[in-house]
Image (tube, rainbow, N blue to C red; front, side):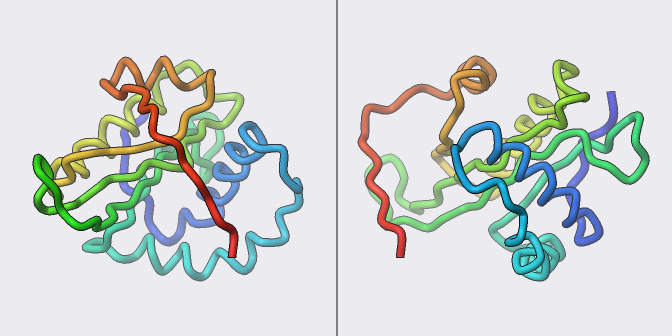
Length: 156
């Protein structure tokens, strides 16, 4: 299997391509990719910040040089502390995606394992994510458990 590595600014276009793979699979949204051009400079900047609270781990595609096979991205957010989590550092996983022709090779699991290590290294005590039904068994096998808390969202 290809090695998991931290994504770098030069990976930004491929990171966006795999993010779109995830978006297309999970959400019934507008399939246009016009937003990629506006997102690319910020993503490149974030991928170049080694000490920041955002990271992406990737696996290079074994059959397509220059392409990525798998992507996992995450952030650490600060929430006011509480009992059991006085530092209030919460990891959030998003954009877990594997190229359709590279699935079932363990790439997403390898990337997730590395991301969970990154969260531990930064003292995040909790990690949250939203899972598709297809991906839920992977996350459960890594120790994630469903939470009954309702999520509300406001788009500004």
